[in-house]
Image (cartoon, rainbow, N blue to C red; front, side, top):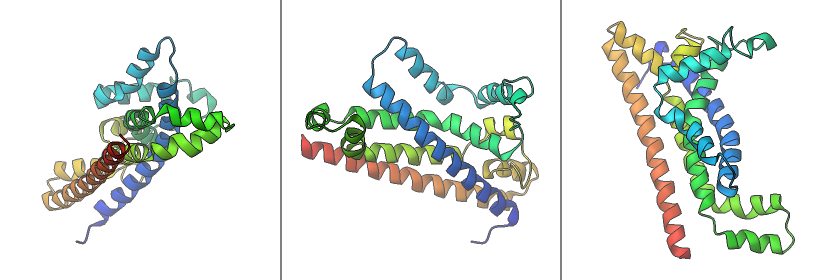
Length: 225
């Protein structure tokens, strides 16, 4: 299937934005997941609630918050950080909306690791970071990978918050979901159909991969039970 430049250019930009957002979300999400899975502290429920808010807030509301933080009246503007209506703003928006998926999936996988294995490794003299690298992360890798795939899929399909903070500038900030919106508005139905089918195929493939990872993780847990 041949795609017009008005589809291929936004697709390439979407992949770049989703890749960058996923890389950031994986690092930040893993740290948060480890913290929430291993530590009990006052206010933990509030932290969990705040981290889950992007899943239920309307995209325009989330975009407004990001616009306030990144815009002229925000705390970053006096520091010389100008991200609004740039590719970087699209990355920030995608990272924020997809981060809860990475945190939730990774936290569940980390919490499912048998603490006796971690204690055994520590009792043999392994420092905490060796226990983390040799025991915790390897045993929870499928859940972490599933979270990363979901994060990428959510970033790839992000629309509302990206439109608020990055705009819809062809060749600069117009991702594929934004391009589909423009194609429908311009009554270019054939091009819109191609773009929609492409997005659907990618999303289906990614979700299929997540289901495969989850089944393998469940099968492994049952074998150790």
